[in-house]
Image (tube, rainbow, N blue to C red):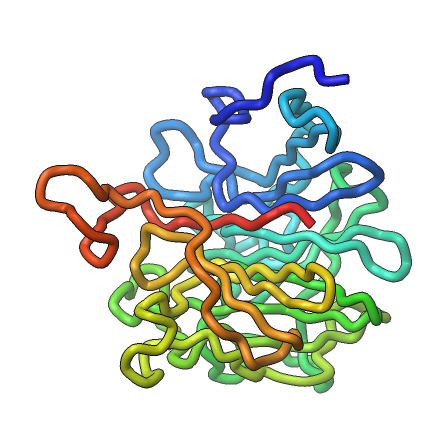
Length: 293
């Protein structure tokens, strides 16, 4: 039975967990995201925290505490407070453990992984996503690794999605090149959850160099997230319009995606001088999030 009415914002007014990735484990929904600090100098300066609620009572959220600190990363000796812990994602491995995939803005330039025995316990550093020769992904001249989305299919195959497409943001790029043809997809070995078996391939969520009119102008920017309902794959992402969260659909997880629509927009449509979505603006940053499985 519900004990509280669900409403927005669903977390307390003092908490800032944007980039939310919700996942259901044993009847509870757990929300993972970056962690902004009040009056912070930049985004994502806090350590990772987690909140959860029963799936049948989404007005009753519980603080699970800090689940991972930046200094736990193997690169901690040179990771500074100004190296932000960007949007993470979580998946349960075939061994029953829980794996948190994350990225340091301005830091290692690769995708880090932490592991835990429970969905919201104390995660420990596990390793870096790497090629079979041991080289971490991001160290072979690939486009920037950014905001990882991790997805395990019904057949047990494991996929990682990353990328950032805005060429005009040198601060976030940190000397790396942007992805120009949509997000990168890597298939990982589920036996260790780290080693690349195939990829990168570009999954076709049109980037800056795609044909004019592709995706009706809702081309990929960042915030990769994959979900599957029935036999259809839904790739959720933030578009180049900056103020909207969009989705594209396919019958396979590694390509063939077609624009499906906009899930939510936080643009200023309706304010003086802003009459249509093409000219909407968002002064708070890009939209990032996903949907419950």
